[in-house]
Length: 55
Image (cartoon, rainbow, N blue to C red; front, side, top):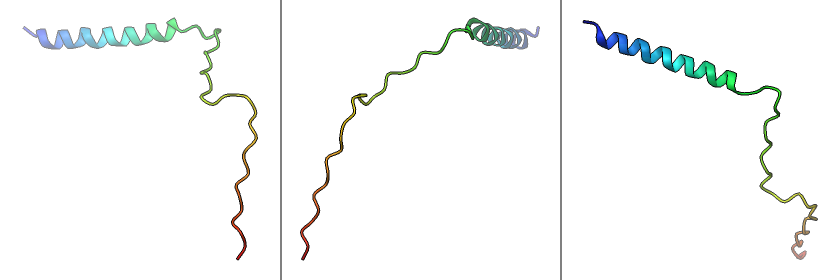
């Protein structure tokens, strides 16, 4: 009997259905959550770099 191809077919269909359901599950009207910025948002002034003395 062809049990192995049957199992592969069922597994393929199950994975395909799971992908389709996961795409449908996502609600397109909900905005995606923006990740928190890694750097602080407070404005910082850059420190000036000292110039080497002229020779």
